[in-house]
Image 1 (cartoon, rainbow, N blue to C red):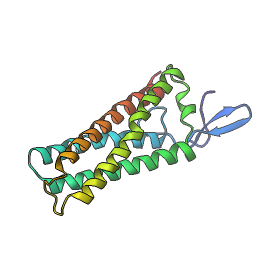
Image 2: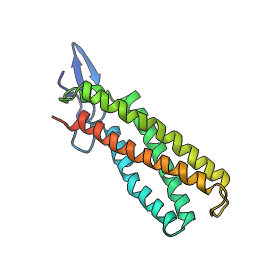
Image 3: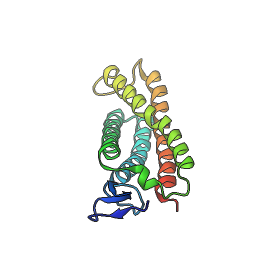
Image 4: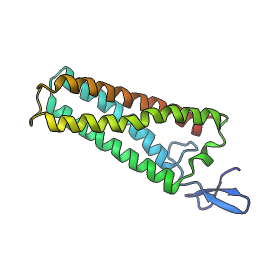
Length: 179
């Protein structure tokens, strides 16, 4: 079941006499789809923004910049989720693209299962932290009675985002890079 390119843009796999669309090729030179590449790059790009935001609030006490950067990260996570869901549900067949991997199916699906633990909990935690901060911190933002709870929940959310990026990268490599 080797993928073939029908138009150069939409590769297909031939299953008997039926051509199954596999989506739009990615831009990182792997077997991944365009949507998968966008999500991987976007997720990894949020990590330095996260680190800078934490630095600003922890060392410089720049709460306003921290708030803006956290809202940017939240918007980036939302965009990544939308791109990912549209790609895997409407455009691409990620399993067709992952099938040539020497780790298919056991290694790829195990990595996916581990990744999903973090990928599902991250937007939930992030939404909670942003919502609580939006409701409980004044404008302009400054420390208050909610600060200790916010710090605890934000550390959980940040750790979860880092683990989502790490496990997502491992899944991506196993599914779309390994030969």
